[in-house]
Length: 141
Image (cartoon, rainbow, N blue to C red; front, side, top):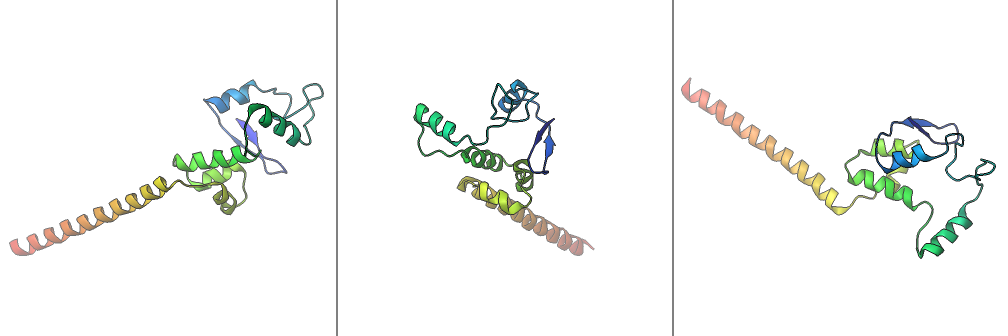
């Protein structure tokens, strides 16, 4: 289990495999922070300057510290994870906040409409079969 959150709004999730699990299991367990001074173990109060330096050295432009959070939420939604779960993983108190991050690709919107279309066609076919059966019974009766 790994504990997330801040400001008395913490929750735990089970992570069993993959790069997230590798990252978490290799971190220092005696320090509850991701960005911290390796000597003191205290959290860095402001990592913006270091982040900007890292981006410049890597040649990355137009990238903000919050962008991985948007990407995380978007990939979850595009993989079919429901918005309630996405909201909980992001630590939001309401679904409205998660909707800001969950940018759906048009293909997923099309898939949703196709699912509805299939369900409606199935219902329509079911009614036709039911009506045919009823007529058949009344003719034979």
